[in-house]
Amino acid sequence: MDSIEIKDGIYWVGGIDWNVRDFHGYSTLKGTTYNAFLVMDEKVTLFDTVKKGFRDDLIRRISSVIDPKKIDYVVVNHVEMDHSSCLPEIMEICRPSKLFCSSRGKQALLQHYHRPDWPYEVVGTGTEVKLGRRSVQFLETRMLHWPDSMFSYLPGERLLISSDAFGQHWATSERFDDEVQQGELMEHAAKYYANILLLYSPLVQNLLKGVREMGLQIDMIAPDHGLIWRKDPGKILRAYDEWSIQRPVSKALVIYDTMWESTAAMARALADGLMKERVSVQVMDLRHTHRSDVMTQLLDACALVCGSSTLNNGMLPKMADVLHYIRGLKPQNKIGAAFGSFGWSGEGVRMVEQALQEMKVEIVAPAMKVQYVPDAQALSGCVNMGAKVGEFVRQRT
Ligand code: FEO
Image (cartoon, rainbow, N blue to C red; front, top):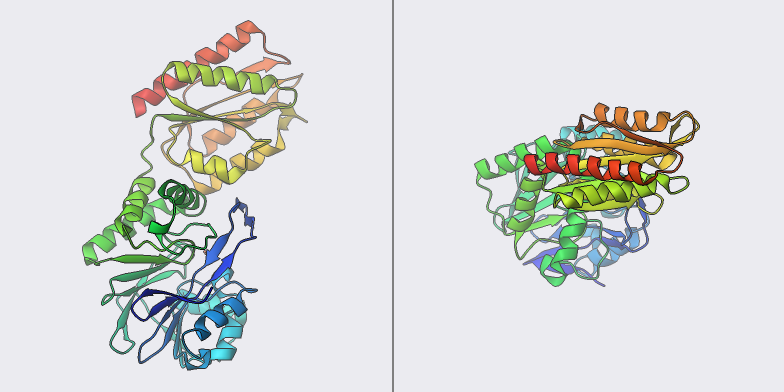
């Protein structure tokens, strides 16, 4: 595939990574893309580059439009290596007269590539650069996703090049939102938000407020991963507004790991109790569920109910992994409870409950512990516990 013209004289020249399956702990089961954009004007400008290993794709796509040596400017909206690790090769090939980045971007580029000789031009929110008949305005978006991150906005084209924000990890032959199935598109966008941006939700709220106040007219949002939003960019802006508010819906997540199926039986009984209260339930066995899929389901859930058997005086390792991961992403407005079976010492459940409390999940039912195998009475207790959590979910949503 050559370049794709996304607007008059503006081309997608990125790379498609069909094979990546792990993005620092996030399962990318359908790969991803590293999007880069070439603007043809008096100053030919390349917005972002690609991950090392995709240089040839980038150069081939640029070459389908213009000789890469004719690139005048390079813009680095974000230094993370999925967008910059082939920058040294691109700088060598293209030798641009200016490299635009934020002040934190310059610092990070120096610390990554140790090239003080590059022609840095530091820009900040409100800086406008003329490219010819077009101009570009920059908007710093610190921590979305790194301190260096920024957006590039082309007002004449009403085009927002949004770096990581509004992206999806999804390798496709299609380039635009209206060319793919909408349900799957939004699932990928939600997974991306839940696993990458959730902890920065207050900043997302500020950003959306800022964009509204600045009155930016946006016809197209071109993120650095996944599909470009051209049919309805408002759709992803509205979704980010909703996700960043973290208003829970009537939904509970029951996640568990189990040694000999006792904790699994408790999980199913708890789910029955939640369903009795007409709460939507997702039961996830961590032996078969990736942490990043748990996180996606947790995005809009009200309740997080966690179960683990006790192993070696602690919780099972997969539960520890998931709780550690969730904690880092700082979900808000959750209620929860802990449960699990044990043999003799039984510390696992207490540790799960403590982990939930430490991540500010409000505990709404006493922890449920069963020694060895639950009998009918114990399972009935789990149903009642599920119903109690369900009542709280209904009150909160
Ligand atoms: Fe796609 Fe934060 O890098």
